[in-house]
Amino acid sequence: MRKILIVAALLAAAPFSASADALSYTYVEGGWTQVKTDDDVFNDPKVDGGYVRGSIALAEQVHVFGGWNYASKSYDYDYGSMKLKLNQPELGIGYHMPFSDRVDYTADIAWVRQQAEITVKDVDYGRFTVKDHTNLVRATMGLRGKPSRMTEAWIKAGYMDGGNEFKGTWVGTLGGQINFTRTWGLVGEISGYRDVTQYSAGVRASF
Image (tube, rainbow, N blue to C red; front, side, top):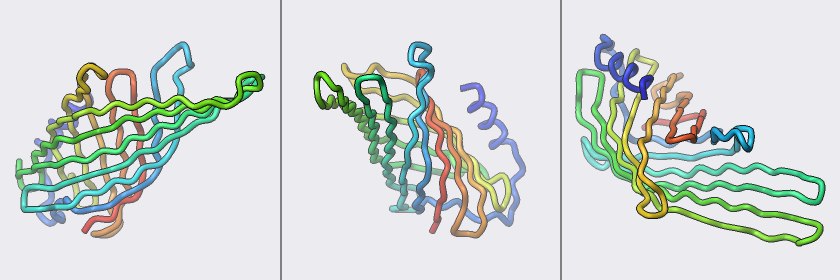
């Protein structure tokens, strides 16, 4: 949370180039993702996979967005194996308004579905699968801006809750983009809540 506040202050105070291209709220992107859990018992497990994400501007200050994350990991032991699969689709709507010439204030709300599946193959008990899922609502506010003509940065903080199935918790996101052209760029993002941190890196096409 401290890092998010520092970046927010820098975004708000930085002098942005007047020749920078405008922020786009219509884009598609995809790439690699990793989910890491701080758990001493399981030696801080990491699960790798991929993600796709997109956004479409519906009006001057309103956009809809969606995405899907998938990660998996296999574990082998003396008498069998286990495979963990994580799926997380999301769908939401966002609002943005100018904070300064090159910084936007952003707010969004989204439905998020966290799904986990474990498949075990055991020489004594055979093969069996256990599945579980939780539906969540996440709301965030933040800043998005262009420190230079070919770079972009964003920070968001908010709250996520799943009712009786998932106790509410604070969430945070810090990300950035390096543009090669007006359309193509490399993106990186870190998001987290409680003891879970997700890292993502990919390619974005903006329109």
